[in-house]
Length: 292
Length: 193
Image 1 (tube, rainbow over the protein chains, first blue to last red):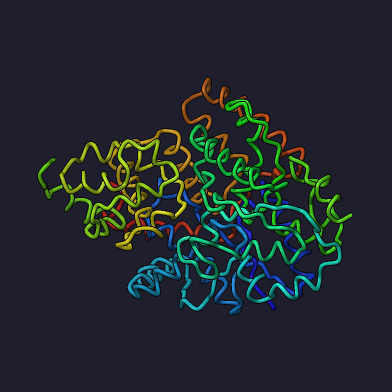
Image 2: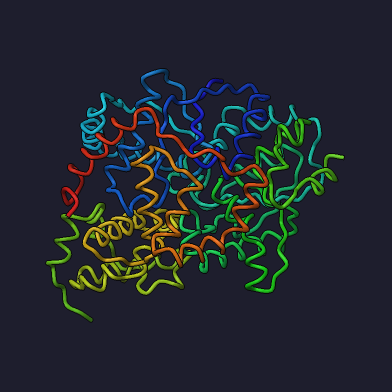
């Protein structure tokens, strides 16, 4: 099972614990990764302020074309924004072939061409559909028994196309958590947006969103919240003290990447492989209770 | 109830990315109902589309809501007429900025700096981007914003979640820029006004 891994800008910085845990956890399941050489940023969700829609498409098509020129592996994009930006290009090309002609006219300026053959997949998609929950369950040596986790799906990991999960009632992350032995608690706000890319400039409004999400998870019994997106992780984890100050709440909920839980349940090193020491709100205590 | 006044609608169809999509709008309001930031919008998307049809150019291009989008795609999923509402709002915000309007100053600064970095490096430097955004309004407010976010930055740094070295340009930056320049020339509404 060989894939391109397009980890994007955040996973080298604020989302480092995602990439650090993703590699060993996925490689333990037989996945192999190759980098897209000289990849560029996907433009995320705020580039529209400075760029036309076509420029953003071309930006993403460059990565797709670079990948396509070398091999036809699927691209795994762990960051939801990277995922959606790339998959959007593929969808729009499929709907309207004229888009591909336009995109290629621009790519030609740099000697590139995209045929439209590369599939872009979310990490949850690959784990659920290529690896499968049975194989994941088999690999678990330290089940997360009794650990109540709120699987926060957020937005761009499934919306709008619903390639591998429902856009209304997603189940994939919960099934993956259960395969690790954890208890996935249902919570209605699992798809409410955290503020995503405009969290920083619109913080007043976005703090309210995060408060709503975390309080919902807690009121349904969750001891920690899992995510598969570096923006969700950042927004949910880093501003809990501000929310407490503003609203008089007492939030102190660990936010972990699904892949960190995988590494822990696979019995891997909690620091080197699960990168738990990179979390600002420490999850080790609660996690160690579960894995014993 | 304003009468139809097609000149601004024509302008939108011709120059705004995804602008023609609003022709499909039946004013049901599901987009507004599904939006996480609806409570903070002056005009929710449904009303924006209605204002466009009524020719209310100033109201639309100065509206806060066209830049209050978190890009969560909920409206896109929920619209019964399959309008990519989010993309229309992004298109309108892009067009408004090009025309010299600034619907949300902070978000506009953030988005523009984000794109400037993509164009300059081909990647995002997570340290440099907030710095540029904070200081976009001068030294005093820059220092204030920096102090305000110092705690977040320090905690990220201490937890190994901040790249220490400055982000380098990608190798193909020159050719990437050529591609992007070409795209801007070919984009809807033509080269930047």
